[in-house]
Length: 124
Image (cartoon, rainbow, N blue to C red):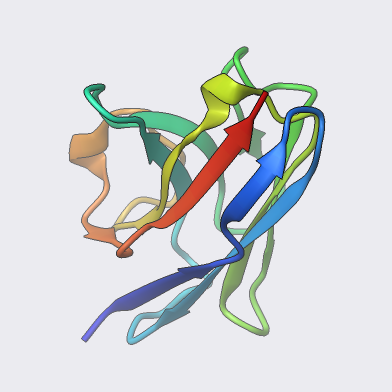
């Protein structure tokens, strides 16, 4: 049974930093692309960051590029999202995701497994 468990969310003031972590189990972690998505109240879930199986390729949308970094440790089956210079508009529930792909796709339909999410709140 595949499990993705996120941790590290919380409340921070604008300009602050948070580090999210996702622990994966029940799957062959190494060959899979990993991703982070977020969903704010009343909005659709959106792609935040993705990393290829070897970690050599990372992809982030312009909205977070330069502020967020994604990394993975295939020996620990973890993928982290380091977030700096947080803004109130970054407030959302953040989800870890994986699937059967080795490359990163921004479409939600390409991701099979999801964590339960962790809340990030950025106050102004």
